Amino acid sequence: MEVWDNDDYERPIESYPGYLGHFYDGTFSPGLELKPLDDFDFRKYSGIVDENGGVRRLSLVLNFGTVPILFNAYDDIGHTLDQLPTIKVYLDNGPPDAGPASGGIILFFTAAGFTEQAVEQSIIALVRLLEADLALLEERSQG
Image (cartoon, rainbow, N blue to C red; front, side, top):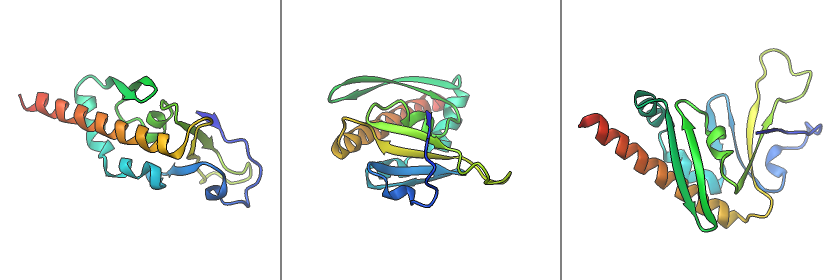
C-alpha cells in the first residue's frame, strides 16, 4: 500500500479519476464498483479464520489469470483489496498539521490499465471466493 502523495487538501477525494471508495475509522464507504463487498461480513469471516489458524491462502480466478489472496484474521479491507491487480490502494495520512486525533484513510482507485468493468468483475469474484471459504470454514466448525 503506497502513501497518497497529495498536497491539495481542498479538493474532494471523490473528484479524482478512478476513485472507487475509502475505508476510514472502521467504516467502509464503497462506490458502485466496490458495493458487493459491503454485504460481506468481514468480522464474522475474520473470527472464523482466527479460530482456524489465523491465515487463509486463497486463489482468485479472474479473466486474465489467477491471483493469490492472503487473508490474515482481522486484516482491514485495504489489505485484501491491495492484492487485486485491478485496484490501487493508497494510505492518506492527511495534512501534516492535522493534530493527534486525526487518522489515516485508505483510498481505493481503479489501477492503471484496468476498466471499471474489470474492477467490478474482480470484486464479484472476490466476494464469491470469500463467501465460499466462509461456508467451508463454518462447515468445518460444525463437523
